[in-house]
Every structure is written in C-alpha cells, then in structure tokens.
Amino acid sequence: MKTKMVLLFTMVLAFTITSAGAQVAYQKTQQERIKNGYKKGKISPAEASRLAHQQKLMHKDVKRAKCNDGRISRSERQRIMRKQQMTDRQIYSYNHNRRSRF
Image (cartoon, rainbow, N blue to C red; front, side, top):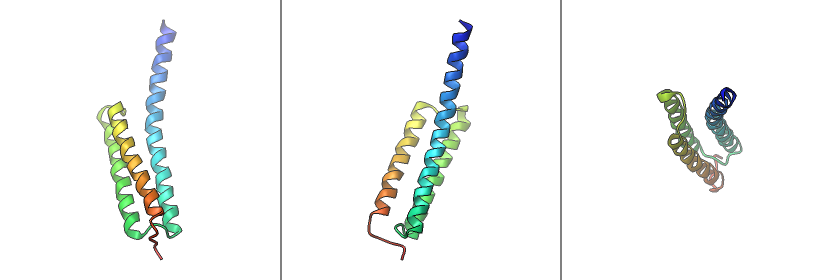
C-alpha cells in the first residue's frame, strides 16, 4: 500500500513538473522561430514586436499560474496552450505573408 502511494505521488509530481517545463520549452521554440524569421527578413520589425509582446504576456501567465498554488491546473494549462497555438498561427502567417523587413 505504501509503495503504491509513493509511486502515485511521484507520478503526480513528475507530471506537474513536466507540464510546467513543457510550457517553457514551447515558448523557447516559438522565440527561436521569431528570431529566425526576423533574421531571414520574413518578419517585419512591427510584427516581431507584436510577437515578442505576446510571448511576454504568455510568460507572465505561466508564472502567475505557478505562483497561485505551485502548479498549473488543467484549465490554466488549456488556456495557455490555446494562446500558444494562436501565437503559432500568427508566427506562421507572418513568415508567409510576403512582407519583408528589407
């Protein structure tokens, strides 16, 4: 019985740490995509500024979610993922909208 409880606690703790780490890794990937698009000239300075602002707001959301109770709840995770998916679509559209920095 004790081993089952310890195993369950360990799995829950690992899942919580993994989900928070996944959010941060996702943001880093998006930041790299923004940098690459800007370096290649596919993203204009105004578009890069908008995307950077969105990244900053998402980082604040993740930080706020962790500060409330030490973990990210399912609803908070879904809200953050929705915002990240919207930002993904914007990065893609900015990279392919035929506007350039040059």
